[in-house]
Length: 214
Image (tube, rainbow, N blue to C red; front, side, top):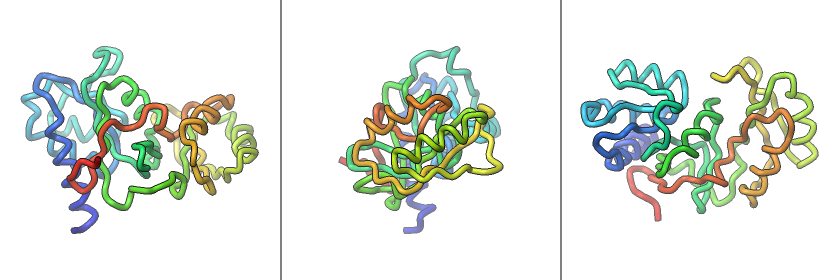
């Protein structure tokens, strides 16, 4: 099975968690694009969506699916998104596409977070994928120095500006054995907007290649 087919099957499997009459939280990325395409087939059964990125918003609207501001809808029943890495405890690294802050906000606002991935994203320990950290632009160097003290090797994702107008540091060289603790520590550094560790609020359900993981 090709990687694209694995992604498509995971996205299709997530559609069964969509409840009629609800507003669905929608993430960002290549796997989520398949979910959006599937959601289009049932757009008349849902009220609409909340989107984590301008990219997803455009794809949703192209399919005629209404996109709401999170402030207008409150708590969501469901959020569906992908991940760059997923460990055995459903903790995630996200943010390869640069939408980590909005993704984290929507995940926190949702009762159920379904993560859809292909086999290659499963790991025993997080950190092989560089950890994205969104930072206020003026704090890029000061945040990088603090991260280096923790043993990480931060690299500026030059030329990338998030939908929030901020910059991203990709942190290499980490072996994240305590994702909850590291998430808490990094979030306390002045200038950090958010970190791409989804550990304090991990996924509730993980679907790999179309099958729900135990």
